[in-house]
Image (cartoon, rainbow over all chains, first blue to last red; front, side, top):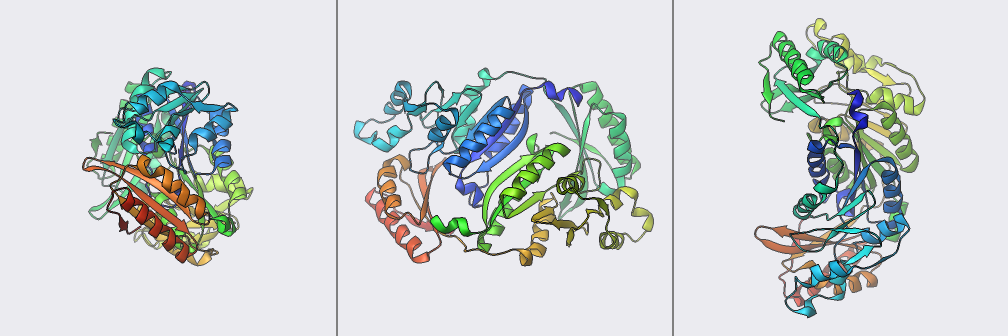
Length: 253
Length: 253
């Protein structure tokens, strides 16, 4: 897929001790990956780091210099361990202060003004020059600064924030993919598979073995920009799996 | 948890286009995180990169210099897109060749020698100086070179390989944790929570809001080396959640 490099690129920076301790399975990165596909934006890297300010700053500055977009998740809530907004401000070398619109959005959520306490007000602290990202679930906004989108860690909120980001993204050429699966051992077809890959350098073929209690098999994924090329490769993969004794079927992917 | 920095550290480097495209949800990182906890080894970073040799080399060299251990997952199968072993050899600046024991382990799997084809033999190519990691599921071994453990991407195989790694790891002081949950809004208790955190700097308190169809709540996690300190903090968190109108309960974590 030679021309893939012309697409905008992206990284996810997931922030949270709970992922590194194993307590929480990160699913936000997968959500962002699936979200970006149709935009033709290539997710190139995912990093997970803990709630440690210098670590967040270093990772963010590396990633935002390297990719078109960075999506951070986590660490923008009201508690003492929510340090993402401050870390982002420091990474960009800008100040951070209460954002009037963020304050208004949050205040509207509390019938009793006493409930809008000091810690909840922390969620309205936004780095200078950032624009807000709407949170229709729990009001506390995310924000965009430069090419960095700062999102919540709670999956349902993170997903909802993506709706507000969509119109802000440059678009590339989406990668189209077809998956063909069969109960054939990966090692039995690796040779002819490499031959097909060599004949179609514009289509990237991935091979994923499956080991399940109900048997083994392989899923072959053809990915590329040109649907007719991808279809051609899928047909070759299907014929090859048939020749190896399998009953290949297309999967929705 | 000031003394946590004395523990051995680790990173996971998950390798595979299928994770970045969103096709596959990485669960191996979480498995490694949970595996390392009881050893007192602190997982500090997770990275996911694609099947791109220079990218793998750069990430691996960064991580192995920075942490006590690196665990890679993925890219050691028989197909053309399995490039991890070569990338690791290049990262270490060593050669790569067929490993006699690996060849024997793989050959034993095939009743008909003709099935042990050229592509399957690729899985016996091991960087110079590496030691094998047993794979009781499908024979093809992983390997250890220096402080790097190179593991399969298929979750059941990756998990099985960890058994062979366990005796090779230095041990630190395990982090003990207690989780207390209640149906209380995170923002309502963020203030008293910060006060408790400030009084117990040796225990790290994480706060994780829960938004579910059946309501909202918060899970508070106290983590530290000293069980009596962690218990003390858990008791304070319980009392605080009760004072906020919740019915706190301990979760198995």
